[in-house]
Length: 346
Ligand code: 3EB
Figure 1 (cartoon, rainbow, N blue to C red):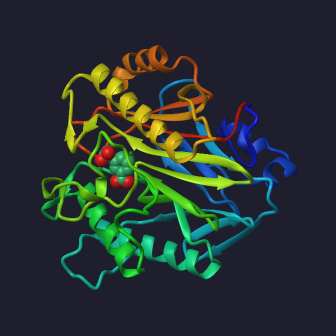
Figure 2 (figure 1 turned 180 degrees about the vertical axis):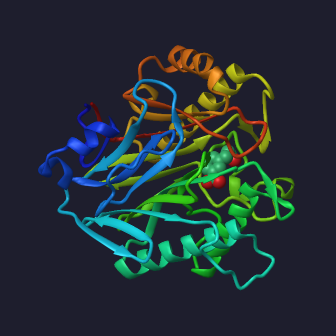
C-alpha cells in the first residue's frame, strides 16, 4: 500500500479471491478486468467486470485488476453496457459479438461496425449521466493482426473508434483518452472504460509522434488515444499510462530483439512520467511506485522481459504479465502503467 488517494484503489488479486470477497469489500468495487486462458466465468452480475481470454504468465492462472472507490456507488445497465458510478468516477464494461452491429456504411467490416456502435453507446451513456471526461479505455478483441476485408483488424478497429468519436462530437486529437488495444484469444469485442466528472489532461510523449498523428502507412484512420491521462481526484494526481511499445517517432525499433524492445518501452514510460511530473509538479510519480501490466507476444520471452523490467525498475508496486498479441505485427512487448492511486496486492 502507499499513502495515496482513497477515491481510487487498484487491487490485483486472483479470480478465486474476487468471488470470496465479503459484501462490504464488494461494495467498493467500481469495476475491472479478469484475465485467464481459457476465460474463466467470474460472476459479473451487477458489476462491470470483463472476463478476458488471455493467459496469465506469472503467478496465479487467473488474475483480476479491480478498481475500488470509497465514493458511494450505484450500479446500472444500459443496453450491453454495465456500469458503476460515484459522484466523480464511472467505470463501465461492454462485450459485443462482432456481428452485433449493422453500419450505415456497407463497406465497414463487422469489427469496424461493432467498434463504432460500442463507442457510440459509451459516449451516449457518458453524455446522459454527465461524465464528460473519458479518461482510460481498455480494448480487447481476437486476431488483432489478422487481415480481413482488405484491412488489418487493428486498423478496422481504429476506423470504427475514430468514426464514433467524430459522430459524437468528441475530439480525435489533443484531449483524447489513455488506452490500450490488445489481441485476446476469443470472446468478441470487449471494452472497459473509466470516466470522470473531473477535468482530465492528456499527455503526449516527446519521443513519439502522437498516435493520432501517425502517418497514413499505419492506416487511413489514426488511433484515437493519448500517451497518458492525468486527473486530480480528492487532492491527488492520478496517472494512467497507455499501452507503450518500442516505438520512437512513429517507427517500430529493435525488430526481433525483445530485450531492446523492453528497454525502449521503459524509456518511453520514463519520458511520459517526466512529462506528467512537469504537468503535475506536486505529484512526484516514480517508476517503482506504479502498477504495471505487461503484454508479451511470445510466452517463451517472458523471462527476458521480466529480467529487463526488474533491472530497470526493481520491484514495482504491482505487476501483471499476460500473453497477448500487440497491435503491430513487429512488436513483441507492450507495457502500460498507472499511479497516484492506492495499490493493494493480495
Ligand atoms: C502504439 O504506440 C502501440 O489503439 O488504443 C498502444 C496503446 C497502442 C493504445 C490503441 C495502441 C493503442 O501505437 C499500440
